Amino acid sequence: MTTIVSLHAHPDDEALLTGGWLAQRAAAGDRVVIIFATDGNAELASTDSRCVATLGHRRRAEASESARALGVARVRWLGHADSGMAGSPSALPDRFVHVPLERAARAVAAVLDEEDADVLTGYDANGGYGHPDHVHVHRVARRAQQLAARRPRLLEATMDRTWLVRLLRVVRPFRGLLPGVSIPGDDIFTEPSALLMRIDVRDDLDAKLAALAAHHTQATGGVRTIRLLLALPRPLARQVLGTEWFTEVRHD
Ligand SMILES: [Zn+2]
View 1 (cartoon, helix red, strand yellow):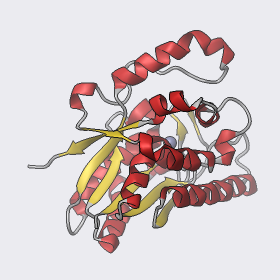
View 2: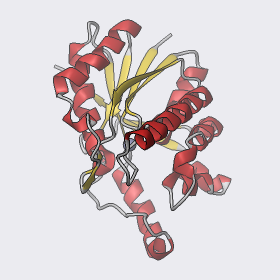
View 3: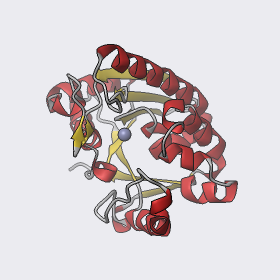
View 4: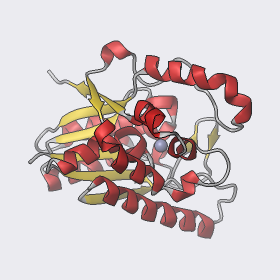
C-alpha cells in the first residue's frame, strides 16, 4: 500500500486537479490523505466574521463529502484564510499567502511524518493560473518534502497548457455568454514537454463528478466553472475532465 498526501489550496481544487487520480489510487487500495491550506472563505463581499465562519464551515462540510466520494481516508485542515486573487485580495486575517514558508511547510511535514507518506502532491510553479494560494502551495510542498523525516516522492499537479489554451480558445467566442468567466493567458500551468505523467481518469469520472458536485456553494449562483463542468454532456465531460497531469520533482 502506498500512502499519498495531497496538498490543496482550497476545497474543490482536490476534485478539479487531482480527483480522478486520487479516486483511482484509493480504489486500488492506497491510503489517500488530503490537506487543505484554507477553507476557501474569500468569496464574500463582507468580512463579517460570522459570515466568513459560516461559509468556511459549509465549505469544510462540502470538502468532507467530496473526500468521501473520492475514497479519501483523512482530511486535515491547516486552518488559514483564503488569500483571494492577486488583483482582489481578501481582507481576511491570517491569509495563507502570508503564512511564513517554514511554518506552513512544517505543518505539512508533520502530516507526512504521521502518515509515513510515500507520495506528496503540490502544484506547479505557476500555481496553475496564478492564484497566490496556489503559488504558495507550490513552495510549501517543495519545502515540506525536504523537511519530512522520510522524503516522499513529490508530484506537482498541473495541466497541459497547450491543451488548456486550445480548449479555452474554443470557449473564447462565447465569452459574452459567460459573464464572469475570465480566459487566462498563455502563461499558465505547464508546457507539454515538461509533463511527466499524463493520467487517464476517464474510468474514474463518476467519482470525480460526484466530488465536484459535492461543492454546492461553488456549483450554484452566478457563473461557476464547476457548474459548467457538471452541465457537460458525458462525451464532452470525458474529454474535458478525463485526463490529469503531474510533473515529478527530482532531487540530486
Ligand atoms: Zn484554489
